[in-house]
Length: 159
Image 1 (tube, one colour):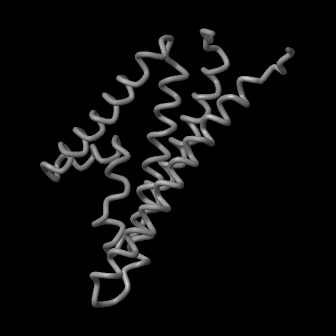
Image 2: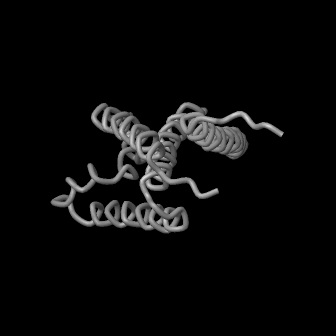
């Protein structure tokens, strides 16, 4: 039996597309169920627009963390250590977010954790989506995608 060779770019592209599909399906199920449940119990104005805004923010954060995990996995030498490193990274971001909430003098820490970029009170308040956070998110996504592809090319594959 002869097998066609598959490029590393194709492998990583398909892995990222599978992760993206998982996020999209999860978000669509969450969106539909949230709109349905809120609509059932809400007796005032429709909140569909607000729910969609929150889901967009959540999607961007999920995309950042997906790419962060893929970049860590591509950069790491041992595939068994990438999951714990990714989990610790997420926990560090959560800790930074909570520390930033403790005092106004620590507001600058919000720039160091994507969790603070799309908070409900900011998105649903008068500010909406913050342009600097959207631009920073885009830059992070591009950088992590680049890192994933770049380091996956150099990675030794154990078969």
